[in-house]
Image (tube, rainbow, N blue to C red; front, side):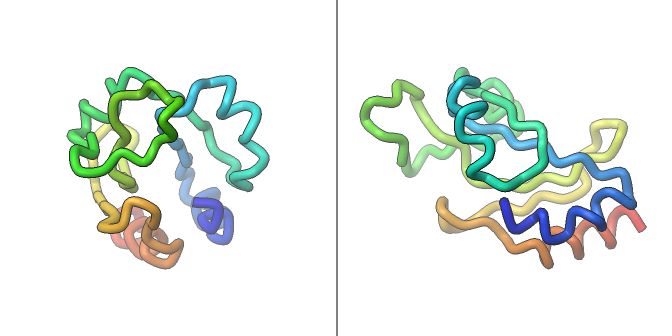
Length: 114
């Protein structure tokens, strides 16, 4: 996701807000925020409410460290949602460690918002 900063100017000129959701504790997000290099709202979903609302619970693989008590992780997914809450585009990673590059996201933004 840090590569998305490469297209920040494209997001900004379209009023696109980037929000991340993870199972990390809020304190961990705050402590590690600078490592991501992403200017985004970063939200904690420890109880998987948001993850489950979008049907994104990863049932096949759990990569959290054993000391982490979260019961599951989300499937890495990028969503483009309009101002009314309508999902315009969904991109799910086949590899839990990889997301689509910024060029894929930018193409979706242009297709749906221009």
